[in-house]
Length: 422
Ligand code: ASP
Ligand code: MG
Image 1 (tube, protein in one colour):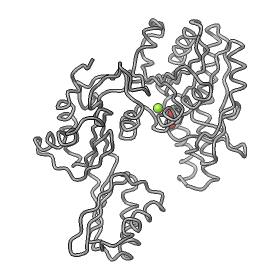
Image 2 (cartoon, protein in one colour):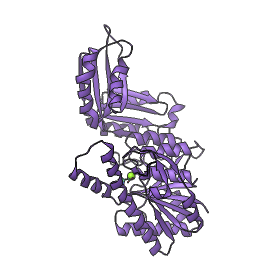
Image 3 (spheres, rainbow, N blue to C red):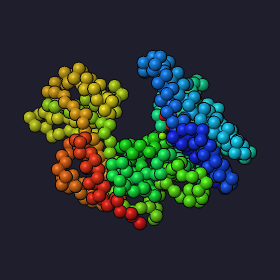
């Protein structure tokens, strides 16, 4: 008997029929002798619908009083789906109880719309489990010190599930979603993409942060920190498939680089089109320049990703970096109006039509020549590299957006990711 956490995404909870399926699946696990905690998302589309209503009444604002109400509003989506799931489980003959985050309590800080979990009180949950109940806990939300309802950011139910699994020291946290696992790359771009049976937590972190949108990145960070074994699997299999097969399906995000781990050097190709490139040209090459440019950007709460500074010529240098596309106009404006005049730089240019393509693999630690192989593949396709950044287990390039699919396909093939590894 083990304590297991299941998390179901919005599509898995998308209708009463699907909720009934979830209930049957959870009941199967409970009847197999497991203690079950279930963390559902809101029914698909519900969070958007609720936030849309708010926008109809008042345009988005960033003040706390508005954000507080947004959280109070958005949190109702999960409260409804959790209660519905409890009702469906009871209809299956199970004892089930649902709790909102504030009832557990899941304590968070007060950063509305992007709160962070600080602690979880497991007493009530444990008592219910010991009494033989299935416990359902709303995803996405908690309560701050002042008793206000908070939410964890879009996609935050993943993080709720992992945090709850960590607090309860669950045997495993199973994330049921509309894909059947983590792939070597997006199968819509490369039909030959393979599902990975296991991926290390570090690789997953790199892939999640770079656009493999299977899991909210914070949930992966959490899983890493608290060593919660995490499995991503499909909720669209028949609910009554064999439980042992189900328990082995999907992709396990593991911590040990154990023997069974697939030993590919590159495990996956990640890509995203969410970034834009900004260059500040003709900057005087003196100490403090990077700080002046990026400090101003950071102060405006804009996140910077890839950064490069050229060698200087005649005491001047060029400085380029990428930001999220949503922040592109704001960053350009900020640099033009404030930073460039203060610095005496020549000009600021920007390009939103870029993409970032990355190869990811823990095998890169112990193998040389992987990055150069990547550059060779891109050269062969005639793709120009605009920026490069590397970490121990990842090499990323920024290229023209129109070559993204070509680059991903070529790299996927060159690193043999379409071949089964054993
Ligand atoms: N319902 C929330 C959202 O749509 C949280 C989640 O689904 O994880 O972002
Ligand atoms: Mg999600």
